[in-house]
Structure formats: C-alpha cells, structure tokens
Amino acid sequence: MLQDAQGHPLSGATAAAVAAYDEAVRAFNLVHGDAVGLFDAAREAAPEFAMAHLGKAWLLTMANDPALLVQARALLDMVRKLALNEREQAHLGALSHQVEGARAAAVAVLDRHLMHYPFDLVAHQAAALADGFLGRFHWVRDRSARALPCWSADQPGYATMLAFHAFGSEEAGDYGRAEDESRRAAELEPTSFWPHHTVAHVMEMTGRPEDGLGWMAAREQKWSGPGHTNEVHIWWHKALFHLELGQYQAALALYDGPIRATQRRLGNSLTNASALLWRLDTLGCDVGGRWAELAELWDGHADGKCLVFTDIHAAMAELRSGEESRVERRLAAMRNTAASEAEAAGLYRTVGIPAVEALAAFHRGAYAEAVELLLRIRVDLWQIGGSHAQRDVIAWTLAEAATRAGQRDVALALAHERLGRRPRSAPNRRFLRNAENIAG
Image (cartoon, rainbow, N blue to C red):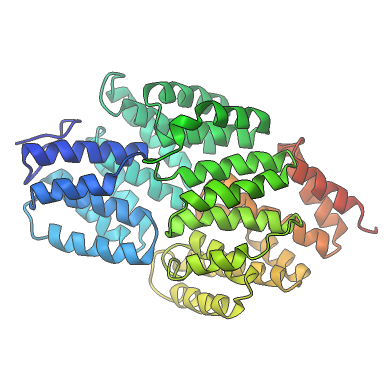
C-alpha cells in the first residue's frame, strides 16, 4: 500500500494522488500554499483516497465558519462509504465530533490516536488548532513534547513539530524556550507561519515591541505575499507592536492597508480586524466608516453556535456600526445554544453571553454594568480560546470601562495589573493616568 511522507499507509490512493496529498499536508502545516487546492487535486486523482477527503475536511472545520462546516459534513458523508484503515477511522471519528462543534471530544480522539501515531502531522495540527479554540495551548506543548523524541531532525515535518512545541510553550509562559525553538524552526522552514508567529507572541507578551517590529521587518518577505493564507494575523501582530509604542496612526494605517487587503471573509480571519478596530476605537482614534464595512463582511460568518470567540468579535463590529438589532439576534442564537445539548452550551451560558452583553453595555455607555459583567467572567475567559494576546481585548475593555465608570479603585487595580506585565506599554500607561485622574 502507498504511504505518505511520514510513512502512514493510505487507503484508496494512487502515486499521483499521494504526491499532491503530501504537498497539501505540508501547506496545511506551514499555513503556506494552496492546501485546499492540493487536497482537491489528490481527491480528483483518486476519488476513494480517504485521507485526501479527511485532510480537506480538517481545513474546512478549522475556519470556524458556518458555511464551510456544511461542506465538511458532505466530505464526511463521502468518506463513510469508503474502506478505511485504523488511522483513517480515527480521523473520521474526530471529525464527526468537530463538525458538530464538539472540539473537546474531537481532541480526545486525536490525543489517544497520536500516542500510537506520533508522526501524524495532520492529526497534530488538527489537535493543536482545536485545543487553541478551547484555550488549552498547554496541551499543544505536552502533546508535541511526547512525540518529539520519536522524531529525528531530518524527517519531513520535524520543524513543524518543533514549532508546535514552541507555541504551546509560549502560551504556557516559557518564553525563552519558545523563542529559541521557534528561531530554530524558522531556520528549517523559513516560510512557516508557526515559528514566526510564536516569536511575535513572545515579543508581545514580554514587552519588546521594538524587537517585534525588527523581527517583522527582517523576515517580511518570508511571511507575507501570495501563498501565506494567514498573513493577516501577522499584520495584526505588527499593529499591536505599534499600539504598544503609542503609534496609533501607524496601527490604523496597517488596518487600512495590508490587513484589509489580506483578510478573508471567514470567521477566523475577520476577528483580527474587529480586535484591532475595537482597541483603536477605545483609544479615541477616529475609525470613521470602517465599522460599517467590517460588519457587512461579518454577515453570515458567526452564527451564535459555531464558536464563542468569533461571536464576540462579530458583535464588536455589529455594535460599533450601529447594528444593535443584529446583536440582539446573535444573543438569541447564543441563548438557544446555551440551552441545548451542545458541547459548548455551558461556555455560551457562563462566558459567551455575558461577554457580548458586556460589550453591548459598553457600547451604550453603561460602563458600570460592563465592569460587573466582565469582572465575573474574567477568570474563565481562557475558555473562549485564542491566545493571551487575542483575549486581551476583553481585559482591555474592562480596564477602559472601569475608568469611564469612574470606579477609581477598580481602574487603578487593573492598570497596575497590566503594567506589572508590560510596564513600558503606552496603552497601559494611559490606563494608569486616566485611573489616577478619577476623583477619589
């Protein structure tokens, strides 16, 4: 039986289909290249090639976009009619959970599977991304840590495994190791998204915006341009470095330029624009009609049941564009999910709905209400997924709401908390100044 580049038997494959499939897996891992097109080429070359269908299904589900989930379900219906080996059955089982929003159940299948198949890069990436949407990046670190001793540095995909471990380490606060491993992985795979992205996170979390901008500039040809399917997120990180330095107009220029040019009309992609505009808006920057344009792009790409993280960011655009009725419909859908048997029902009930209600309160000027709602959920906010840097937009909103509500004690406490992590941050110093100016 034919095998993939990591030595796994492939049911229903042909030599030409395997060649396209291996390129697709590499593109999926690097987040560089036309992975969907390559999986499609493999599917067309061998219609009964199970992993080609499953690989594309993983790509579609990871966009966290309602329309793409419909396509993924159709692929799974096709695969269920095929003869599958043990590895392929595990992928089908995990994906059957994933398409229904049961990410923890999907990862549980993949986690056990990877104990026996430590070279399965499709499963590693799927588990890493799904855990990211669950806020469990420490599992990405630990899962890759148990697999890496099985690998050798000359195996295809080794740099990807090293990069997974590095990003999980960064989110767990092991910044030195994360940076060292990422720089090594970037040398091995210069166009890979993961190592460049992790170094950007390290520099964001450790308060090194000048180093971050230098890292971006030195490697821009490697992370930007055609083929980089999540380039928008790297531009977003660059904008955050400008925010940290107080260069707000430079961040807005990035929004108007490369961020708008490289974002895709998908849930995961549009979150970048919402998060940046919301920060700039609260800083007092005039964002003009940008919110209305963004809200239109969001239409149909977050449905109140697919992912809390995307619902929160869609609501930002809807609120600030004056589309409050759309937020009410979103909250109604979220409440339906919260009352259902869905895996995410509890998260929608305890964190997702209060978060959107808090944003709505902030938007209408009910700042004290926003403070109370966000203080109650802040300890559980990690569950919405995303990185520390991504979730910070909610903590940022809480700090600003406390200031606008005139709650001097809360505003001072939150400002000092933020400055304890990043004392040179211009927005954090602004939070402190504004808190100190509240009458005691």
